[in-house]
Image 1 (spheres, rainbow, N blue to C red):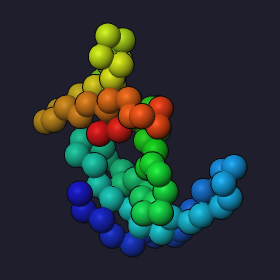
Image 2: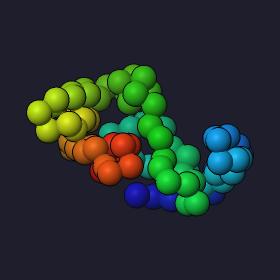
Image 3: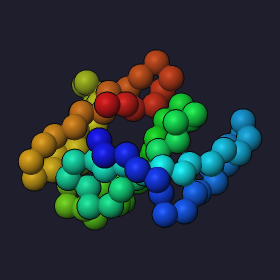
Image 4: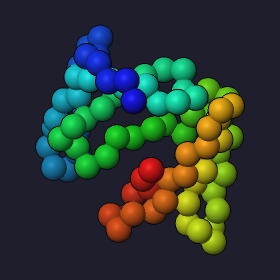
Length: 87
């Protein structure tokens, strides 16, 4: 992943407080960089933006996992102990 300074920081608000993300990174098959929060427990992808980028998203109920299929690569996001889905 190519990680570099963001053009501007964003604030991330949660029940634990507020933090800021000031870096972005490229994810294969997605046209826009995504914000990365090094101190966060997760970096969140927008389902709508992933679809708009032309990726197919499939949920496999038996495996409890999402597969994101792009033109050159597929990524599988499995459910973690925290309840989030991670790759």
